[in-house]
Length: 481
Image (cartoon, rainbow, N blue to C red; front, side, top):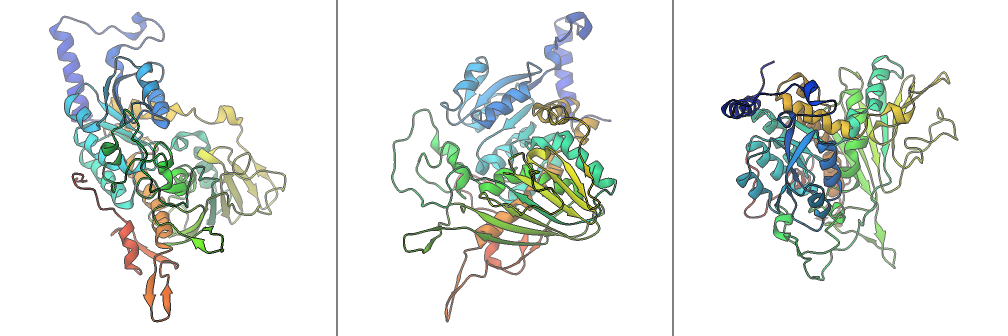
């Protein structure tokens, strides 16, 4: 397999330097067991180093199998632990300065709030850097389409951070389905206990003092400007449409992934949502369009595929709502996770297949009464989280188009359409309370089934909903392929 020009340049530079100074590459066995020569390591820059970004950094570093050469975070308070862990890594607040000024790295991890994923990722790819991006891949549907196209245009090794995609649970579910254990699937139920952050609340109006060591302008990035508030940063940004993608965006890439992958789904053709509300003292529902709802229910319809030759409806619920216990599953068995808080139920002609978050604890309950479990225990059965990162690291070393690259489970050619499908649910959720004035008052045309043209990224029966396909970028920010 011919490797990318990027890898060829990397190899050429390394070989030239070694030859120039009369240095020979010493075989691994001479150096000793467990020793990895510096020439075999991937040089990685980290963008977003607090919270999940910190663990992404550690999993990518993976006990010194990669080099962390730079750490970039708009909030150096959040990045303090990362700076201490890697004191020799160069420090930045603005990713643009990192990409402009530092060239001694091959790949980037991007673990920032959802609204900045696309602009940072595209800039990294345009600078010839391989990318690992936290889920959801992007903030809106259009951005996901752009990044999917960019990965192929710039020949970049990509991976989205839905680590369960590389675990044995999902692989086992694919194997079970391909064997025909549950037959064709017509209905899928998916649920989560999220949000576990504030949602369905008023936009704050007070203006607290900006915390030290935080570059708020760069944190806002392409989003609409708002003043700093602790209800936005850190972490609580997930509940605001300006920055986050709510419960569906947070957990959808973990929970929708197994059935999406097992059934070989593509773009949905229909979507319909309803949302919960917080009520005032006079029992009037409060709706705050800037804030994601406290709970929601969404149904996506997918057409028949080669793997599943009948249409399937995928129903999502969040805010603690979940489907009822199927008759085939014994009453004392959990559904999904061990506490039933998150999970997936796939209803087929011959039985039911279930799993928890990340594809954990897969099970089959057949109409005959038989229960099928994985042979291994849960602890042994699922790939450690850093395996998803390590597979990406190994693929980066081999280059775009290599066998390892093609075997990645969540490269953008898969993660892009998956993200688009999930964010289609958010489009319907945000459209739910759109209203139009009529002679008799108001009606809510968003509260109906919306028809989706996936190829053209367009709702065909309610034009107002298309405002959520993409966003208007703040002055000075753009997404140009």
